[in-house]
Each structure stands twice: as C-alpha cells, then as structure tokens.
Length: 86
Image (cartoon, rainbow, N blue to C red; front, side, top):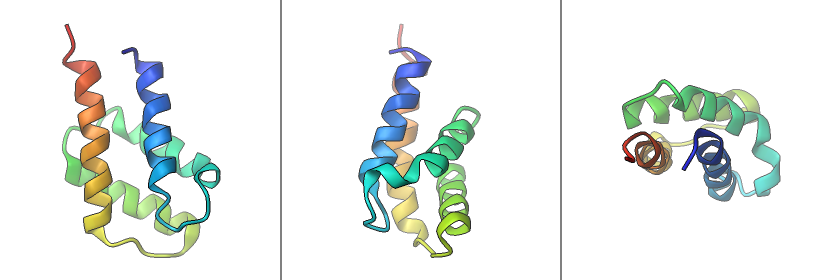
C-alpha cells in the first residue's frame, strides 16, 4: 500500500467513525488535519489527543478521550501496515 492509499483509507476510517452522527461526508477538513498529523505520529495517545482537539475545535462538542483512543489505534495500525511492509 502506498502513502496516498493509506491517506484515503484513513479518511474513510474517520468518516465511518462519525462521532457526532452527522454523516461521513461532513468531516473532510477534520480528517485531513488528522491524517496530516498521523504522518509524524508514532503513539496512539498523541493521535487521540489531536483528534479530540481538532473535532472539538470544529464542532464545539467534546468527544471522550476513550473514543478517540479507539479510532487512533485503527489509524496507527493502518500506518504501520504501510511503513512496515517489505
């Protein structure tokens, strides 16, 4: 899998997550921000905190960190599948 494919899959994962149940298509800016952060991140808790901050800033609604951690593990696993492939 290439970086571009990983980014597309990460955006899809974030859209399907839909933390505010408003529709997967309404998170494009937030997903792009999280995917950009994911490029340099190595720990799920860093990604989770970033997700929480980005979504709270955009929607003025708080997401429990535990929910952000769940999705961050999926994103880190996706990233590792790209960076660790031979």
